[in-house]
Every structure is written in C-alpha cells, then in structure tokens.
Length: 485
Image (cartoon, rainbow, N blue to C red; front, top):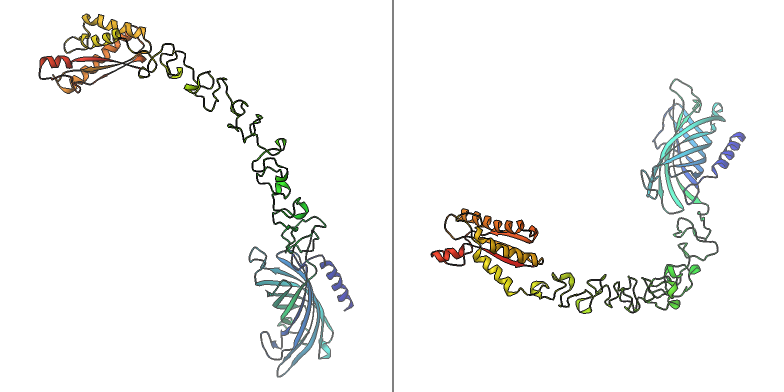
C-alpha cells in the first residue's frame, strides 16, 4: 500500500505541468456512485439490487484540446447476494487515466454544452472481502469506459461516466473457475472544479480568455476587457495619446487632425488641407512654391506668374488651356500660331502662309480663272461614244486641270462620272465609273499624286436635265470636278 501511495505521488507530480483546460489548467473532481460485480457468482451489471455506495476523488490536467490526463482515488463497497453465496467487500484503489475528448474543435466545438469522452488507464489497489480468503487482495486492473461532461459554467461542470475494470485476478469472489476473471463496472456522477489562476501573459490582471488586447505593456491601466484605457474613445490608448481628452487620429498621436496629414490641427497652418511638415501642413503637391490653395494646376509643376500652371512655350497661355503647348502662339487661338494672320490656326490651316477663308480651311478664295478651268472641264471633257477613252480634243482641257492642281497642292479633287438613261442601268453604272477613273488616271499620269484624287461613278441616277430630249441627254453625259480641302 505504501508503494502504491508513493507511486501515486510521483505520477501526480509528473501531471502537475499540464492543464485541465487551456484557461484553467487543473480540475478537481468529486464523484459518487456504485460498483457492480460480474463473475462466477453471476452478473450484477446494470442491476439495481444490493447497490452500495462508492466515492472517488480525481485530479486531472490539460494536455491538449483532445487529451486530459489524471490521477484518481476511489473507495467503494460491493455486495452481490445469491441464494447460495454472498460477495461483499470494499475497494481501495488508485489509478492513472487518459481521457480522449470529442469536443476538441475537430469533431465538436470546445465550448459545446455536452462533451462526450472516453477514458482508459491503469489502476491498482486492495480488495477487502468479508471472507478470510478474500481479505487484502492486491490487484492491478485496466479501466476502460466513457462519459459525458456537462459544462454548467466556466469553473464548474458535471460529469457522468461508466468504466469497466478488467482485473488481473479471479479471487474476488473466492472462486476460481474456467469462466475467467472477475470484472467490475463502476458508474459514477460527479462535479469538477476548474482551479488555478487563468493565464495572463501580459500580467495586466485580465486573464487571456477575457483579454481582448493581449500584450499590453507593463504598468498600463486597462479596462475589464484588458484593453488600455482610452478616455476620448479615439482608438488611441491614453498612454500613447498626446490629447487623451480630445478625440483624434492615431497618425497624429491621438490629437485631432482633420486633414489627416499627421500634423495635429494645433500645429497645422492649413488644418483643412493635407500638407507636409515642410510647409507646416499646407499642401503643395507639385512642389512649385505655389501652395495648392492658390495653385490652379496643383498636380503639375508650374510658374508663379501662371498661378502654378506650366507654360512650355512661354506664350502666356498656360499649357492646360494651350492647344499648341509647344509652339508659341496667340491667346485668341488658344496658344496656337497663325503665320498668315487669317484667324485660322496653322494646325488647321491648309495654306498657313497665305491668308484664306474658313470655308476653304485657311486657303484663299478660288480665283475666277481657276473656277473657269473646272467649269470648262465639265463640258469640255469628251469621250469616244460608248467608251471610257478620252478624245484627244479634250487633252487641252485636262492639261489645264493638271496645271491648276500642280500650282495648288492644297487642292483635292473629287471626280464624279454620270450618264444619260440610254442603255441598261448596269451598263450605265459601269461606264460612269470607268470614265471618272479615266479622268483620274490622266491627272495621275501627268504628275498629280493619286492620294489627292478620288473618283466614283453614279450611272444615270443623278441627271441634271431631261433625258427625253437629245439636249438633256447630252448634259447628263458628264464628268464633274469638285475641289475639296
């Protein structure tokens, strides 16, 4: 017995480093219940006759979310009566056990109300029977069972468990037969008390389980949740707050900072506008020495004379308003140059060195003699009958057009071919296209860039005279020349 008690003390000292829960590391449990017999005399398991009380005391420690380990002592009476025999005696045992908990966060949540577990271990002790033969039997056994834990509060829980004792001896009932060893069923209900101080790693007086602000520096006053006091509720703890009674920003050490530039309003010369410390809180994003409050172009480095805007060509028209920011121009044309001073900016002027009119995109108005050349081409360009071959008699007319197009590179021509309604629509369309193309080819062959000329045929769809008369049909058979810019 002394050896058993010494072994128990050693086991308890080994267990003292573990915890019952992650918060409260040790649990002390008190149980009451019954122990029932099963052997050569019969089976008392789950029978309510001749039940005698038993008691148990255990200390358990937390190993992990899945396992607890503990040491248990129990004392109990057993009585089993038959017509021929009576088994009566007392257990005085000590056991070490391991619990596997199903509320380990993987199967069930750790804070579940009903937490099942299974228990296994090794026990040893004494059996004192009534008969002299069964007195002071020392024996070892293996307990195996299951239970359920009902968590009634943070510190107290109720446990109900039943475990089968697989003994090593067959002499509890003073009978030894081929039937096998004697077994016992221990069924108990108890109360567990989680003891010991809760973990408080930052030592602020609030356990880690309740501490919402773990890691508080030593000496800092905290509230019931373990968080440093914050009188002005600005999320900056008083011990870090330069303005503990005025709600402010963390970037300004707890002081008000309306523009969020990390400069407290009391030190900020522009408290409503974000700015660097170099300009005492006033913004100058482009660093052009014109503060943003006065800078028309606050994001582009500019000139003081232009209120902070750049003027690349120095024409006194800021780049943001200048349609020609790299060419010195005039304000009336939004900074664009106008070499011929015709009121049309050079970039839009097809004749930038000759004063012109808007209708001609800056080119001079067409002279009467040039208009006459194109008018003569309308009636003077003749083709062989039913063909797209230009008559030689029309060459002088076409040469005059070539001369005009050469002298005026700003001109572009649109050549349109037309026919009368003699013949089929398909033939007329094809002939009009070919004749317009023939006129174009003549000009190109005489040095006019093809990109300056477009041609199209319209067949008999656009008559300018009555096709019922010969004179009308003659007028409808034409090639028109239109100058565009």
